[in-house]
Image 1: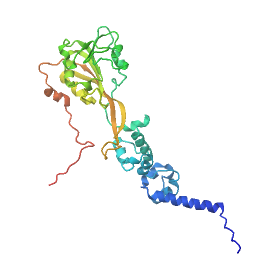
Image 2 (image 1 turned 180 degrees about the vertical axis):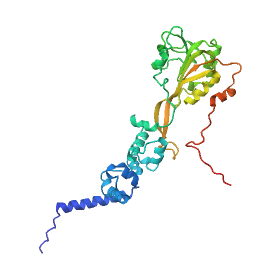
Image 3 (image 1 turned 60 degrees about the vertical axis):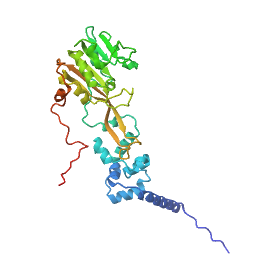
Image 4 (image 1 turned 90 degrees about the vertical axis):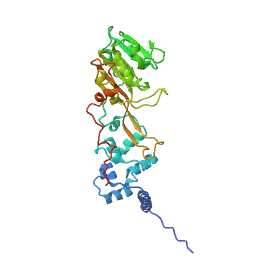
Length: 355
């Protein structure tokens, strides 16, 4: 019996079958993904005019082969699987005030950059869109020009926490000509007197200093408001005080790490009742952060916006205060002034009376 010759398969037929198989596989994968029409068309300008049905077909037939993303879920499933179902672009945009002009895909990339700490770039500014008060004169590492104006032989400068723990902390070098006194709770390099800052007036004469400075110390004071009162006692009328501390930073020097401050907290202590007039205050040194895997499930991976490392204040002592009559409770009215706790915040709820 004569063997029948095998049917030859033309290259075009083989390519057609492969294409069909690839198309079937793509459709199968596409069917398992959450398709978001708005995300898909807004992310890629070349298909922005497609209706929903056409967009679905495009993704199944072309988009998935071109490695396009059809939803935030798809993006994170591919790039960061552990956050695939936990990221809401809408909430992220609203919380971080990200412009609608930034595409959903670009927003996903910003989130991913945020989650992975990322490389510092101009894009980081989208995480700092609130009305947070920023330092101007007292910016971290940039206060030296302001401080240099006090460098003359007649100026008396007191530094609280003067012990050198690093070369950058040696503030005395910025005042080579002044009458400088450095105090600290511990002896060490650059310490003239070992003194507890809570008791300054027991060691120094009333209104005897022209400038009081303290950097990276207030977070380590057990009762910083008492230290502020003591500063006012030893600072001359017309004298200045410059403080820098932390708003967001890791615990350190335990167990003597007591507080973190925003600029409002510093202003509340350096208040009018103690004779102070604020010249400059604010936050500085922005931090990009997020909740870690160890956080509660509803927080995991979510960004924490408007974080800053440093908080500072520069104030003038414009008048003396009555040391015998001063009372922190009485000073409360000068601290809060005419302000009120905000009624409509992002964390408030409009409860209805249920009768």
